[in-house]
Image 1 (cartoon, rainbow, N blue to C red):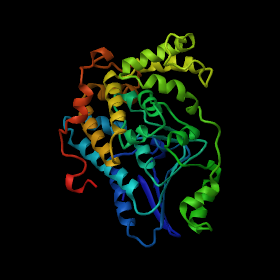
Image 2 (image 1 turned 90 degrees about the vertical axis):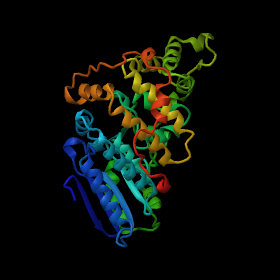
Image 3 (image 1 turned 180 degrees about the horizontal axis):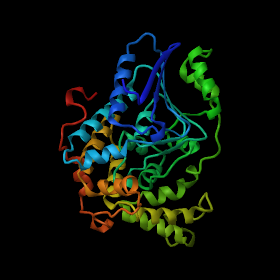
Image 4 (image 1 turned 90 degrees about the horizontal axis):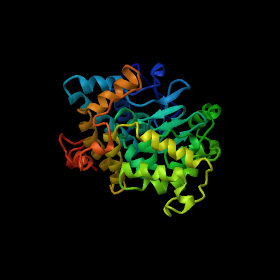
Length: 374
């Protein structure tokens, strides 16, 4: 057992806490192994009836994978440790999704990347007024993984594509609307929820107990973007998405020059937001954007979560060896100059068919052997 997580059992509740508060509980290989071992042990433990998964401190559940560790893996000359990490992480996330006992994930505070992998597939997913949830991988020249493409693919309309490409951060209302969460519980009520889970007050199932504390948050700003997001992000390519965003920002729908764009958006500020979204896309890694768009759209056609993990694994093992991931982590985390130099630098320079090749080519052993992938 590592000191980076806490695991206790009391009154039938197994309580798993990520314990790296100074690093916003960022997930490293050591933590993945420890979490897996605990869940394996609790699977058949008669003393554990329900599991609570949360993070130490009030700033975040989990800010994602440990990017410094990933950078060391990626630039160390041997990619195998990174492959081992991703296999172990995806198996842990899939275990959470299929676990035979209810897992209650509390996404209080920052929950991004690998944190979404731990919480987004749990049986009961709770957000609070402090929740900030995102799949921000394109900002570091990477692509959403940890089953994130599965969640994004199942968001309403084209919202998942928007969330993935622009790495947009969701609050509690947005996460509920997008299907990343199930219940909203104010942070001040979390201790009372934990007490109720331990006491098993009537009604007795964990889902019913959570509903006793569930409240209705304010309206979702993300929901108000649905009209123009669907119109713009349904374009075939990232370049065309940017073009539609620019056209919408100019008011081409209102003037009748493009009938596919909404004339009267639900949000009066939508044109300015669309222009900002287009500006942002033009600063991000063209390679990451291209692969991400294809990955989320393909995930819509996959029959199982495990199939999404396999597709993501093919993508991440390719990205580990690419310039843009190394450069993105350098710019955002190592040197913090926020000035990545992407290669290629423009969408038009991305080789045709690259995304399909990346997602189709199984260059390494899969996450699950074919005989045990179910």
